[in-house]
Image (tube, rainbow, N blue to C red):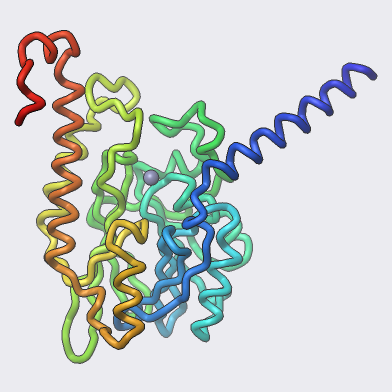
Length: 303
Ligand SMILES: [Zn+2]
């Protein structure tokens, strides 16, 4: 009996601690609502202030990219309905990559709609395990999420079509083994616009780029990903987080009448170049043994 009481008390304490920990770790910009709006053609923004979700509306039903946090589906539903569409018309659910800030809401969205869940093959096991076999976060419970059945594992370059809209899934791995950059064309004002939704080119704190036994080819994958990203012709620059492409500033311009605010090929190139430099700097840092860097390259900091 006393053991049971103790267990209950301990469980409550752990639950409170985990709750506080998660609350402290989740940036408010991830849960702050953001006004939904039409970006171009049949492509709409339905995410939060920083966790980007995109709705593609077609006559055969809708495609949703990114389900975000486990708590996000209600917010996404509200945004879709505010635009005059039906959440229940979601037919296909896609993600940028298998981290909880982009895919934790997927189980709930699958429960609430008839959406089929298409995930890049290399991220499918992570999504189906709820993050428990992620190469970096397997033992980090704060990064886990409801495990979700994947209906179709996508191959690099595979196209997803619905009601006349075609999206292409590009494997731009490294951040996760299946990080996906989505491209599609939209027609706006008689122009064809190439849209790129960047999956994530970022190296997270603690990522081992050298001798990573859980992901031996991580550095090669990042390099390949940057080559792929640099090869895209991009007019409309978007990504998994609003911060990648300056969502707030561009939205303010959009709201004041500049409906080309999201057309930003230079911003896209600059962002990819900046992220590639950050990756190469971290790779070089990790490739140089500490004692060597101190002894053989004493003047590195000056350059
Ligand atoms: Zn991530």
